[in-house]
Image (cartoon, rainbow, N blue to C red; front, side, top):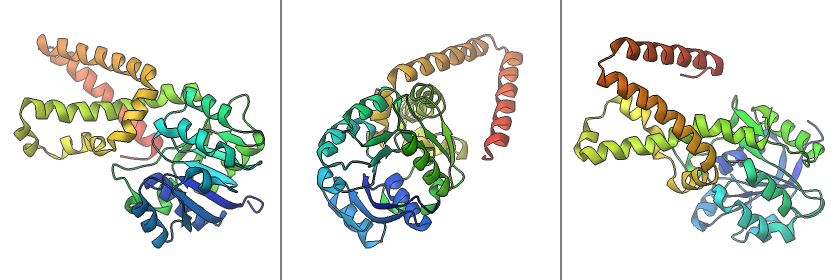
Amino acid sequence: MGKLFFDKVTILGVGLIGGSFAMALKESGLCGLITGCGRNRENLKTAKARGIIDSFDSDPASACAGADLVFFSTPVGSFTRLGELIRPSLKKGAIVTDGGSVKGSLVYEMEKLMPGGVRYVGGHPIAGSDRSGIDASQAALFRNAKCILTPTKDTDRDALSDLSDMWTALGACVIRMSPERHDRIYAAVSHLPHLLAYALVNSVAGADPEFLAFSGQGFIDMTRLAASSGEVWRDICILNRENLLEAVSDFRRKLDFLSVCLEKADGASLETEFINAGNLREKMRETIGQD
């Protein structure tokens, strides 16, 4: 790890992920100066006052000038626009990566935006919280978390190796897969659950808003994701909509089957479904080590 050091790092979007990334880099001794950039100047001032970043700039192109590493941590819907803005100021040899929850065609679009000598590698640390903003940042956020890197045939192998080493140093378990496979997987295990959480809360409130006041811990646990940023998840759902629509269709078929079981008062089939799901949940918990 001795040779891996970034003199200047620029983070576009200093919220939960961006702020945690800055803190983790500093704690691991992998960087010199960190410049933050974002829409909320007060947020950037807070990040600087807390020592999370060393400087800030409201202009993305200026913030990225001279950076060895640029990390996108804004809503994914803004990636290509920001890429166009910073393109002229990216220095040769720089690495550009991100923490976005959608890869797919976005990776190829970002690759095309990079000027000669600038290397882009798509990334997605599987870490987060229903809390957002700089106040939720923590250096330990990525420890023992998966981090997906999504190389293509055009990905620079040295940049890929450097980012793998970096994420490993931050405590993450690095997994490489294609952008397409990433989006199929996370449509099912991440994007669909968020969509369902939003729908469930709105469905109950639509029946009678007072019902929500009687929620127990089960409902609260199941709908935790509904507290996530609407702006962030709007972009994710739209950009991965084809995979997400397929996941919704799969879920609808399972829900329709359960509806038929209820109509027929088919307790045996319901119990079989519940037991099967419980067993799968237990295996999943054992595999990933979380409740």
